[in-house]
Length: 167
Image 1 (cartoon, rainbow, N blue to C red):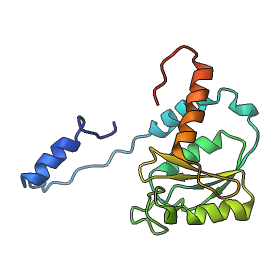
Image 2: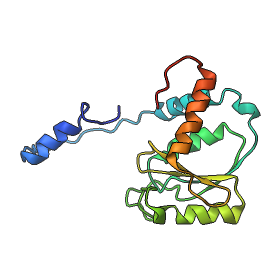
Image 3: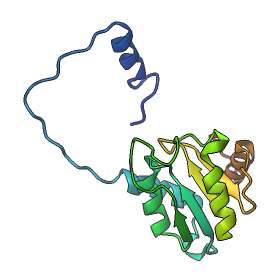
């Protein structure tokens, strides 16, 4: 579950401001590897493109900035007939290539250059937790978010006419 004001962030804030940290137990715990979240994300995205098996093959450059979008995009593009150039696909919380914030132009400069260099159809940049994507067009230009929202709203409306849009 994503953390937000009602799901944990406020509790963490209160612990910090009240210096209410607790001692960790000395006994060792265990690690349990769970899977499925990536597949759920992929399934939701693929619903937006119901005929994805017949989708034109695009040439795409993807830069998740060594962050959390790597597993989701690895899985998603295993279902799509696209030629993918991967940048910064080693999960590393130290973000060795650049900060995972594509809002800052300096963090998409390499992606923009790689789109032009490889003659890709477009590039995808991700923020650290992969809840926002940023698109670079074939000329290396950043596509403003309002344009992306409009495209997504149009797709949603075409697939679900008469329903409220959630964007």
